[in-house]
Image (cartoon, rainbow, N blue to C red; front, side, top):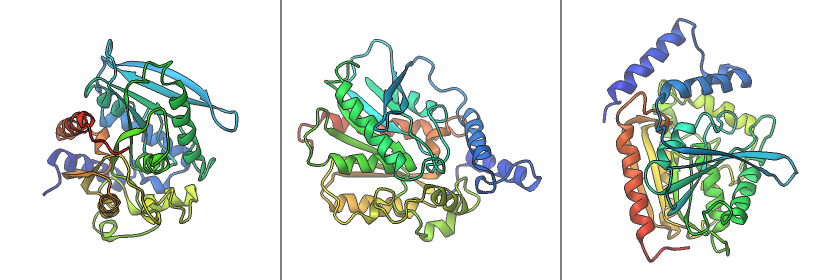
Length: 318
């Protein structure tokens, strides 16, 4: 399938800016510049997310005693049937609650769902495993305070995009076989990083000119410093357990496509019910592109239909 025409025009404009010296690829920027550019791009990619969503600011304490912010998103007046625990992407170096506010609003608008989005500390100031620990601490806090938030009777869905999807896989693996107040009932994994520091064919096909570049990936991984730990590369896990049903959503024109598809195969091999959907014509980060291409409306629609179906089943694997 050809690249989405609206997205192609956007990428051509970005390439023109690069050629004329008006912008640079992320890996040629300082960390501070890269973060600022990523935040600025969010307002361009999706300038008009759903406004009829209640957003509550939260804070809780990490294992080291520092404060961690989070947000709670929901449509007014609902009784939540599911809580989507959502971790933002950004290669462990960029990204924030603000950069993915549009994604959380759109997910919350899919049904009677609450989206709980925790922040986590970024590299290089906080290299691996800080993001993993912060994600675990956030989920532990949610488990303890679900009743206070009115979420105790809702189904837990672990979700994230890109590096955030990788963090969600760690939480899903941790949860397998453990008794929890809110055991995961589903996973939403959007274009996950499945094996850092390993180049596959997709890196050659789509590693330049398709938004996310292979050199930028290397820049992220160098800052994160996770080495070959499976918590940054779940394909390296020696024996994946059977987990809650997974929805693996990949982009055709993404250097992470091959590893994402391979991880979906590993999930299936573990006995985890797995649905793979490939977004033809789209690139990495498509969840944040509702202001660029109309194709994202069907992306979110498909997610909503899958969630409704999987949460309705009586024979969930816990």
